[in-house]
Image 1 (cartoon, rainbow, N blue to C red):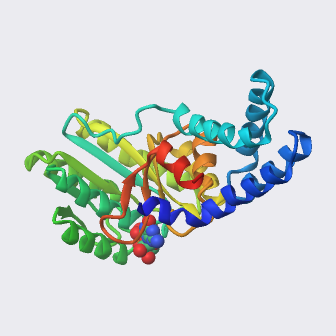
Image 2 (image 1 turned 90 degrees about the vertical axis):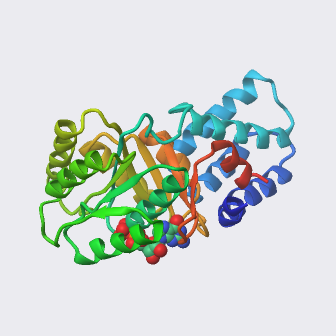
Length: 300
Ligand code: GDP
């Protein structure tokens, strides 16, 4: 599958090393766990999450009186799956019932525009009436690119000029979505993170417009982060979580990165489910995140 292919570097970075380590030990001891710890940290699982994984595996070894080194592999898999499903069993997009509004937040360059295009395309193919609102008005290029993506996806877009008030764009998007009876309104937002207070003010203004103008809409707030940035993606996610209520995470550029372990760090440190993953630059390269498939893809 595309996911498996995309994760081949992560697989090399985790599974291959884990297997080498497990083969080189005859009995389970502290040194073995230290080596496993290092592999996970190197694969961008993050220090806290790694510690937790290793502690949990140690506990299971004790509880189940495990003595065979090779059984550690299954315990690791089990542990990773647990982390990826503990936040929310149901990690599908929150867009039912219609109408729904999806606010997409994230810093520039992470793949926000591309993700909105892919998502619009996908929802349209599922038979939904989709509308996009170009709420990132700070760069003319952002509006142009989003317009191109809306054309590719075959959905309408509401856009203002560069420099317009983002909240006004979202307001117009909501009125248009109501008038056209759209099922899903996908809103882009500005992605400047240089000042947390500004970011918060801007996002809050947009959230207030949504509460006031579209209270009947089912709401999803998706944060887009770039997997190739590793632990930086975790830091970004933390900042956004402080600025607004995120309900789901999209992890982009999971194809070809060795930092796939960041999925675990994001999920366990933020307690927000990863809902979608970007696995390429094409319009169809957006997948539902499936914890089982993910763990199988890196441990195969
Ligand atoms: P934005 O500034 O956050 O809106 O980012 P863009 O959507 O313009 O994307 C930035 C770059 O990342 C572009 O070159 C995209 O083609 C690329 N990109 C976005 N998502 C993915 C993905 O899932 N995989 C890969 N390989 N590239 C991606």
